[in-house]
Length: 111
Length: 111
Image (cartoon, rainbow over all chains, first blue to last red; front, top):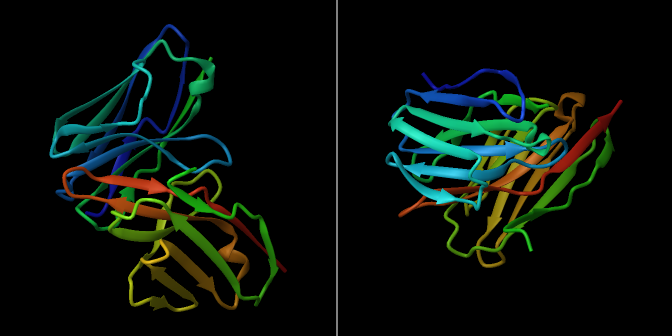
């Protein structure tokens, strides 16, 4: 099953809300990624988990909090976001050196 | 300077044309290379991996020059359906995995 599943597909949240984005893969990949993509821009790396440990945090504000409960799941917890955080959030997984598979993304709007 | 750079385009070409995209990367430790395609409001999808010996997949040819830290993609006989953003992706893995996107090149194939 070569698939990365992200939920929800769309999310509208207020600046005082707490929400979570979820990502799941069953390909046995040991690296999982969160990206943020604004319109007409390439995806920007936010976090990387390798073997369920956070290995890269690209200076992401603390209002974004990643979590990797097990090797198949990746969450992104959101709290006190700003309107400029509205974007497409993409999850991906890969195995060393090989292609990355992407989920369809969560389109987030902060109001 | 961004880690992975591309000419943003847009490239406007007629159907049947041959078009070439270039990409440069700054991290000499980078180990694997890919071209992804992204349609509007969709997730990136793998077009092809890029090998040092060069590789071809139908109308698409990819080349890698490690000495110059340069990657290219050639599309022959362009189709309307080739219209998309083409993203060069560079992977550095080992202790940590890091998958970095280039700035992307927009291709518009005109009838």
